[in-house]
Length: 108
Image (tube, rainbow, N blue to C red; front, side):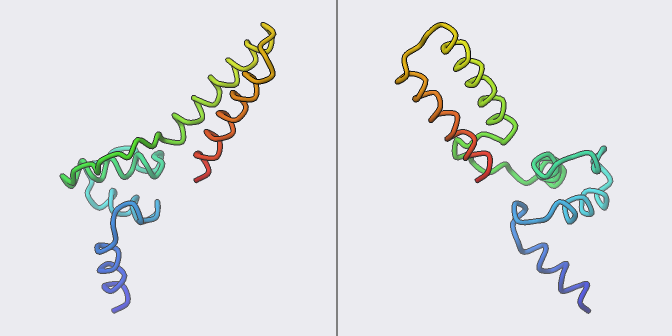
């Protein structure tokens, strides 16, 4: 009895609220998705939506964690280059704040 109740609850909650384990189990049941165990949550969500025909939700302009970390690396490199060229303290402080904000978004 408890198994059916858990399945019913899982079906009712949105895909974003599922755990990675639940997503992997569902992807394995479908059988259409390859490389399930090597995927992270975001990749699993995308694959499950595609397999089930669920449309992608509208993005709010928030980048993925990987994109944000790549952006942080690029800003750090720019900061180091500007520091070597002798940029003002004000400019370096601006870059430091931008890097800090981007890092905080990865943790949100």
